[in-house]
Length: 214
Image (cartoon, rainbow, N blue to C red; front, top):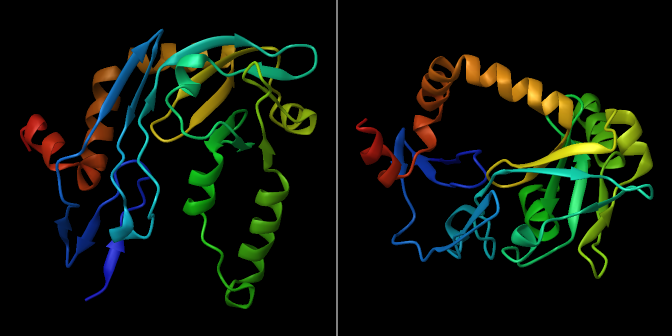
């Protein structure tokens, strides 16, 4: 019977015949809490699901930052010190008007390279578009990354921004837009949380399932 690799990026597991098959535990975890960002590093080797050498990251938190006149963004030290690699792929986020930042090697292992002849014309064109809108940025000795002008212009991101952790990657938002999003979420927090937790049950670890009482 075929195994299905669940698409979650930070809590990979296999589902075989409709049943969860979890990697062997325990995790060896390092917790770092500073400012408003918590990063949990799991050095577990995900060789069972084709991500050998890639540990799962757990990025959370909110940082109010400013992009300088040269389009440089200073990545907070509390983020950098927890990542083994400091270069990022920057690309348009799933939400319109945002940019997503993925650590370099992690992102490369998440994206398979399928045979071009096996793809439909539409999928091939999407890949051409998506990767043309993606840029690899390296930090300078002060931890600043240079954001491409064309990506800032296309997404409409201004100078006053918010950088947030979204489990396995970072997202860059216009500050005003994030504040509006945050306020809207707080207004419906109970309903939104219940709906999200129900959908995410299939990806939950044994510890999370036990904690939720499911």
